[in-house]
Length: 535
Image 1 (tube, rainbow, N blue to C red):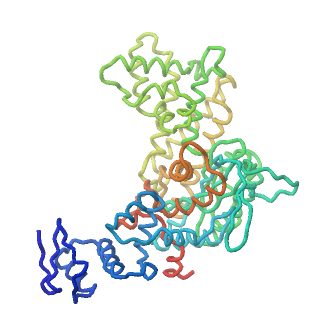
Image 2 (spheres, rainbow, N blue to C red; image 1 turned 30 degrees about the vertical axis):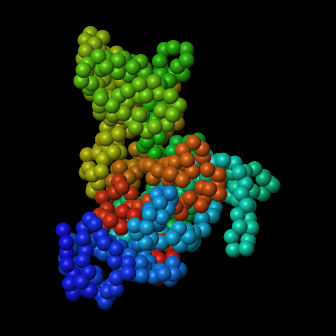
Image 3 (cartoon, rainbow, N blue to C red; image 1 turned 45 degrees about the vertical axis):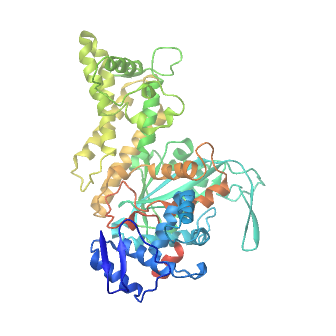
């Protein structure tokens, strides 16, 4: 196809074999070319036109230092470079496109220095990014997700601005006892809004933070978020012993008696503590793995006189394999005989507790005939866990307290409480697991009440988990430092800006609209946001 632009210096544009017009002179201005392109190709998007205009403008500049770039082009190329530096370098060398140099992108990336503790520039960046995304008012409400990741013990010398400093020491609370041990973990805080907006806001190198250290850093971050207009209604946290102690510091008695809600001194709304659903499902599965009559089993789960042992899952799986068409087609050896790596995978735990597993267990129970009563306890448990998994994977928002899912959660909570009252310790799941069930279900129902009744906003169950921070850790390990080893602290902190700029600040689990391709890129550079948005 050939399009003649006779009114612009007799320039011909071909789709396919493009002749070399490098030395050909034309009187057409860049705006004339853009106007003609829009006329001849009316379906070009605004993003495509910006890229074409950038090529026209910067191809005519001999001095690379004189090139100027639109903020959207910088944002897009930063996202590409931070995700795959080698690919971007190859694209630069190919000469197909004129793009910002790596040194230019590096300067934009490192405008905000990531250091231990709270950083006012990071909160400012987060606020301006939220403004640029046009977050609705309720998008500034959400939760804090926090977790720790192992790092290599290492001390690094960092030089910036003529100053030299050592990084790699614990920095969550200044030690007064002269402790000089190196940090072996990083505590990461991520804000996750109800509309899917996410931003890693602070991190601390630690030797595994204790409950008082968590308490101090947590409320410091809550205060900073409130000052920038972000409101924390919940905290999603795994069931580690330190986290459990941290939660209990906020209550005089059992947290469940207070619906997991504590007073927020910086806001009129409470802060609600939630156990992470994914970690809870893994704990329930691990309790089942340990249940049985053999000497290596540590417990014998029993409900109403009916035993629940892992061999029931093994037998139902073997029975299902005998059929040409499996009932639970996802079930495999890694589910039934998990190794250490398999034990960490959320989906493997969920798939032995979900509705497909319930269907298989019911059919296997029917197949047993007269001996089917032995599986009644397993079926009863799977009825509860499958409903929990279904609810916490649901994208449909909860709009009011009449939602049937809230009634189901309260019913499941009562079922677990009744089980605990009717059996001895040996026949129950671990007290940590039972406590996490209480923390999650009581806290979520309270959160739904605060969100829908007090603030008149909706609550989507799918968003309430720790997947956001786990994704951050996965990128730290796999995307930037190789999946074979954890980074040291200096590598961790320098990669944080790459993650912010490389991934979309709107979670892919959200229903937020992405009206153009640039909305799915990473955060806009801090320096460009400062020019666009006055704070």
